[in-house]
Length: 114
Length: 116
Image (cartoon, rainbow over all chains, first blue to last red; front, side, top):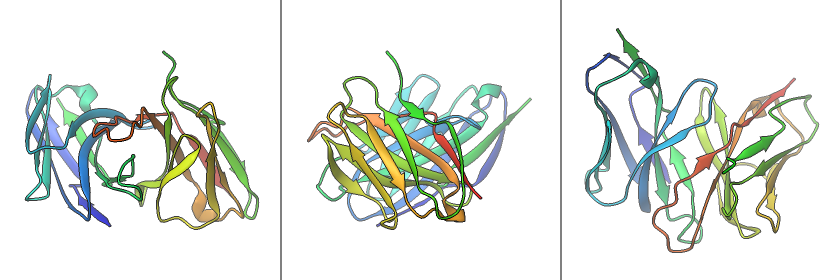
């Protein structure tokens, strides 16, 4: 099975940098995703890591350490529109060794203030 | 390119009834996954269908079932509804190719189910 932990809430200032951590325990790791979800909307894809290291995508970066069961999402130059829930999700091997069985954390509610 | 569509967007049912939700994936996507989202439990995986076959399954009771059609559209059914089934039901589609390590999922807007 899977167990994913991430902080419930975080607050940061516009223009600043914030790091959202995610730790996981898994029986068959096959990739880690970060999604953003604004209130009342569907989650949207931010990043994907399957190998150790940092993946950068504009203002967003995501890091993975498989040996430590740890990932973080880094948001730079925060904007008010970044206020949302950030979901960490781990994909495992599933029944057939493939596919899209994702286990999500409960999400980190980020509030960006002036 | 049209996104993932789900119908209906809102639904009110009473305990004991059954409900069918529909999901149309992005054109060309063959994998459809279903999730239940509640404030207390977050997003929980229900099942995934690929080429009309259930490829993965979460830990939900047998009252929750699904199917996929040859055009990749999918339906999920919940029988004998309980109050605790009130939730946002999201479906997500992806290419779903075998052996692919990268399968970004695109989510639909969800169906908000309220059980009274």
